[in-house]
Length: 579
Image (cartoon, rainbow, N blue to C red; front, side):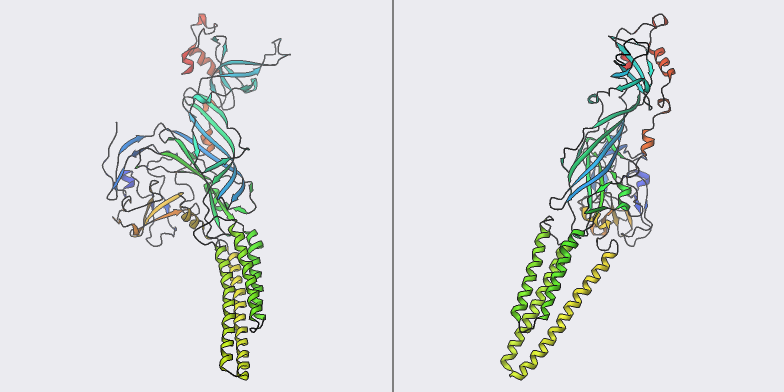
């Protein structure tokens, strides 16, 4: 039965469990200053295991408050632990805005219906079997009632159309067990949203049943190695000192009431990185893969679980410094030598300046071939424009002094003109000295800036803001200082109509700012949605650690016929075995 709730103010989160404030700063000054900021727990609706248990669909916002719609129960959702371990970053294409990554994708989940499945076992023949010397292995059919964590099986062998009593088959007694027919069991179908293509090196998926029984179901491990190319918009304002966040976007193909992604604690390192890039370990370690939180109050009919893998990359830029920018610097040094040519030889001086100007613009063409077209100027563009303007100013200075010299020759005698030429030459030398000193000191300042870490390339927070990366999108009210998570529905576009008001009833969009925080910010070291420990997640219940003969006896006593017929095998497939 659908449940309809009255409209709830956003601010009373602790009392009414709405999407309210999750972050609160004691100070109202400087929303970018995270000193003292604290994370107040999981997003609304989430438990400590990183699962949202219920949400309201078709919600509407009216006067800064939610009008809740229909309640959707997610208690039966299947948690799917997601782990992506990057191995090799092969390439980051500046032109196509793509990156190629080799990674291992693993998923773990517990299927409550996965037990008592039909299979084939390849096992060792008994020593007293006369065929054992010729063919030491035999294949038998049957039903696996339980699989223990150490590989032991509670196995019911099929003989013709009948079934023998259950036995404990030790891991050392069989060589191979055919996996269940995965087509008839649950699988968390997913899609890479920004996938361009997969290369030939991508392997076929592997699935492994770790343990199962009739009460808990089966715990499954999924593994697949990908060599794939993904699309990623590059933020190149600081090129060639830019920082990039390369992301793998994963979405579930079923709604969150069916299954939800869950993050795994810990991090993975990249063994090999393309020589042009380096991984920022301080940012990479806490947020390899994180799950985007779902909205407790959703304006749509349904939601799907979303996850991201984020790589924080810093461009080394050595190629552009050694082969382009240094050459431009040296070309302008040659252009500065034009001041050694007398002001009277204006043709020779302008010829030298025009040659060096052509050389600089040629380097601009080389760079433009390696990066995509952007509406803004990169740092490299600004430097080349600065070098061109510098040469143009030298040309303007040359033409201006030459013009002044010619004009004065019309109104002065030879002696006065000769004296004016000396003054003009002196001014030319002074201006040339200023140009040379300015060029050298300017580059010295640039080198000092480059030596200071992070100053030249900008902060990671700026990269998150530019890419609108929703690791922790937060609204901040400059009036009362309150902070709360941004709705995923309005993560990119916020208007007066869809804005949730703060406790101070400040509904002006100009007073409420949206911030994108990074794992490097205090209070956001861990993802917003809680993660789980993989060792605890994979741990089997105590009774499923090692096979026990008593389990087989208990099963036979429960399902076998009376004692007079206990030795006889079953004459048909017992439906109880498949329960």
